[in-house]
Amino acid sequence: MFKVILCTFLILLLVPFSEAFSAESTDTPSTLTLSINEDNIHVYQDSDGHTVVVGLVENNNSLTPVTGVQIQVNFYDDTNPVPLEVVQGNTILEVISANGKSPFSIRSASPNPQITQASVSLSSPPVPSNPKHSGLTVYSTDVFLDDSFRFSGILQNGGAPNSNTNVYLAFYDGFEPSRILGVSTIELGNVGPNAEVFFNLDEVIDSRAVGFFLFAESNIFSSNFVDIKIPPRQIVDKLITISDVSVEDSNGNTLSELSVGSPVHIKSETLIQFASEESDETAYTYYVQVKESGKMPYVEYIGKFDGRFIGTGIQTQTIDWIPEKTGLFFIETFVWDRNNVPIAEQGPFVLIIVN
Image (cartoon, rainbow, N blue to C red):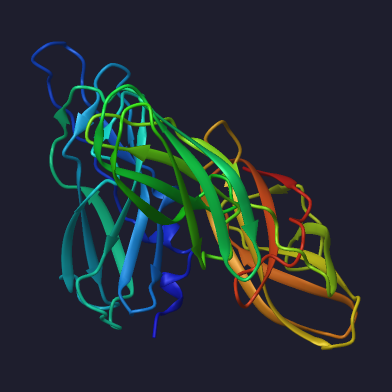
């Protein structure tokens, strides 16, 4: 059984490195640079017991598209420094445009329950490529979510025949920065010139998904990424509110400035009010995420607390945190049920200074 280290959040701490490669183009002096955003990486166990690692590769070069991007994933257990498996994979897109991005999804070769950790790296230098022109256009006609996710859309092709045409949906969660939770593929095959092709998808998706990137690629064309929000699940039987988020010392004093290395308690209250009498007990997980303030906020810490609501009323949650670096940070709080479905609006932001 997977350990806590494979929790969706803790993978942010489990990816020990992401390497960037560069290569000279024979036509330009520009440098080809790829990166894997560690904050986007997500690890989960699929229905067959295999470990799946999904994430995003970014081409930071403003001039040169790349192809042949290979990614290596090392799968480990808790004790042995030698990986249990080493798997090579590719990005979803064959060609990543200049300043573009592509998700990846790499699966362990076996359903090994001993796998508890994973590391991700780029395994070979990228190859300069001719661009794939934006001859494909994709858009949605309907998005519906109940017990499963139902989506329909249309692909429009430009003035040339295409083969190996695929439409992709890369689902992401509601955290900032978002993590890629999974990628679904709709195979369309050959598409004639100036054609419109209708497509649809009906499947169960990760309940944490709040939106997805819709995009397509064929042997000669690609499309832009379209960001589509998923209609929220309706919470009809209960209302939970997070309030009074504060940071306290060991004596219960509220703090606005902290010191590196000094333990503190992040504390909040949640109010639950039931609108039905079907059940008076709700298991939940309370999450705290501490991020460094800035244009590209760095996730400094994630903690969680498992509890149960009995009936209605107020509960207090407390999570310990030891600041490790100075700066301005903000604290986010969330409450999910044990199926990883949000059952409360995100709590109020709290800014804190660490000296």
